[in-house]
Image (cartoon, rainbow over all chains, first blue to last red; front, top):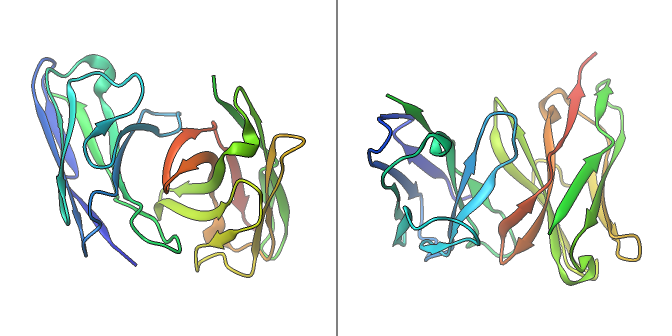
Length: 109
Length: 117
């Protein structure tokens, strides 16, 4: 099983600030990496797929990068609606054994 | 737009069973692969099962293999998860999602399964 490790666990950012979230895979997942945002009481929402492609309706302030084992999600000019928990997920395995990171909580500073 | 509504969760004793359902609307259900994903405070997000668009191919996480069965009814635009031999560690929110290449594009609101004596 590919283990996904996210850092930091919690990130405190001021509105208008920049957040940089990291995700590391225990073995290469190529670019088969997605990022999700989850707000309290809601299901996760797809933000980024294929490491850097934004999902439909996701604003340009969300940027994904990386390949192989190291990935980054950057959120520039944070808005109040951006606070929540962010998860990465690899979908490189076939047959599927897709795995998620444990999440990074982005909170208001 | 894509709308997924799960149901069927509840409180069940260890060893018990449930049938989870996911009603889909707003898209051509028979064109989509589907998955079940669960989330608990202990294990976080966990992919547990996947079914091809026709229902021919199914896959399971090792943690549920042999106990859970995924199925679908394309005529009814519905996805199912039969969960048997439930354990305390199966306690979680269960989500159905559309799946493309393994990423989860659209999620339902979830149905809560609690396994406790």
